Image 1 (cartoon, rainbow, N blue to C red):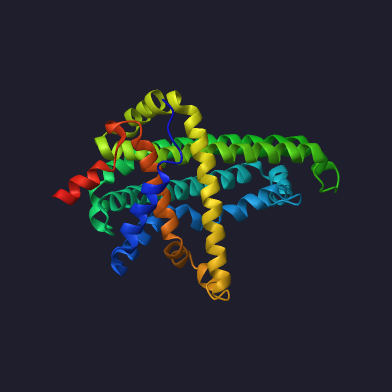
Image 2 (cartoon, rainbow, N blue to C red; image 1 turned 135 degrees about the vertical axis):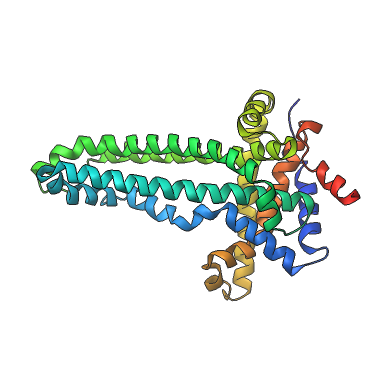
Length: 308
């Protein structure tokens, strides 16, 4: 049985309106904004700027090779030590940011299910779930790092001799295109895997109070593989809905004479403005998952909470 990608849209819209606007509560809005801010904490790292630097013809990584090349030739041990330190610091930051994101993910999920804007209570209540989800997301990040390092490192080795012998800074076009294509493919696949971990595996963990690996195994074996086509349509539909939502937001900004543009540059304010989109897509994914049966219906906890 295929899963519908259009049927969950209406209940997701109705739940979004009921949570945010019936009635409107500023404290609930701010609490939900805080949970979204924590769940997307990685956005503060400037990852898009770093990606653009890696993909530019005169890229940052190429400049780093030029800077380190004389040091590597004169004192290779110092270069190795500096590289190890940079990698350890970067790894520590990745673990810290991912840990905060996992905590925020369960806070946001709990708030959406129970229609509230709490932060401290779910932060403490679901710390074991978040620590377990951290393992999966770090594994995804490790695979991505290894793939990107290969995609960037192999072209670097190819042009290494040219950089050492000549003053030509230009990377051969085929090498640059291959590296760019591999990096983009990796980013797409990693983003897809990470979204499945947060949109589908995390709710199963939340509903059944299990760790990430049993939930991940159940999701792949019993949900994803039998409905692979439906999940592909789900992501295509999500992309179309996201474009429609951003277009509507752009129209509202233009109607307000662009007075919101400066405010949107502030991270927290940006999440506060975009909160209806975040809530809608969370409800949309939960309503889509609920079609797989009662064992996947996280929103049934909403009714139980209302009755209590």
